[in-house]
Amino acid sequence: MKLTFRPYRDENDYWRIRQFLREVFLLNGRREHSWPLYRWDYWMWHVNENIFHLNLCENVFLWESPEGRIAAILNPEVPGEAHFQTHTAFRCKALETEMLHVAEEVLSLPTENGSRSLRVWTQNGDIERQILLSSQGYARQPGGEYQRIRDLTLPVLKVPQASGYNMRPLGGDEELPARGWVSFKAFHAHEPETKYDPAPWYPNIQRAPLYRRDLDIVAMAPNGEIAAFCTAWFDDATRSGSFKPVGTHPAYQRLGLGKAVMTEGLRRLQELGASLASVGSYSPPAHALYTSLG
Image (cartoon, one colour):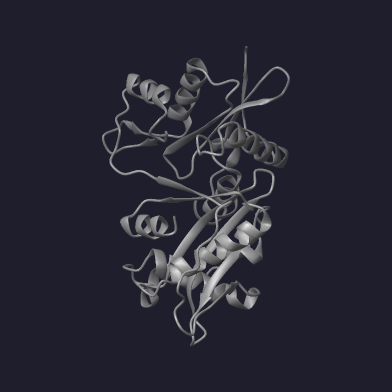
């Protein structure tokens, strides 16, 4: 079947891609062989809108069938990398080879020696894509994302809660500066505080279609500061929930607050009807936290 290749055009594509990702996520047994919907929304409304400001028409590409069905999406998450979102009914070596060549042409970055660099993501068990990448000269790099899932048809265990701390949803606009500050401290603890940008970036996240304030959980310290946080995302069409981001201010670490906010998030997801929860991690502390939650 001859597929038509074109760049992203407009907001209509945004909504069509959301439906495509839902469909493919279910076809893949709710495993991240393609992006789940929350990841697309989070990338669009935070990672790109607040940080990289990539032109979507120059960085997101679609392949469509003669009937107009989306067969595949190619997109970055950060500059210099490529993520393949391929429908199971259309996936083949020829399609992914074409996607790779497009990624090399438009998503790769120049290096100091005059060549170009591209990072392409693939699952450990995706042997076909690994063979394709190896045949084109790609080599596996250290590190990666560890993806965890949890069955929410099982009970959510209660965890001890530090005395005096309150788990609740994020408040109104007056709390957004504090929420931005604790995020900076959680993820940039070793950077000088002068690097903190107080620009109001959080409202963009709250514009994402999947965002729910009741799933944006914070741990309030006895002194009124936000000590820890997690944002849970719920997709009712796939009955799945996910966490991104999760963090604790360095001054409040080792009090069990990360586990406490996530447990609250799991409980709320369960009440909404989610039967599966997922979270991705890159660092040993995050691995340990998510393992402790099952």
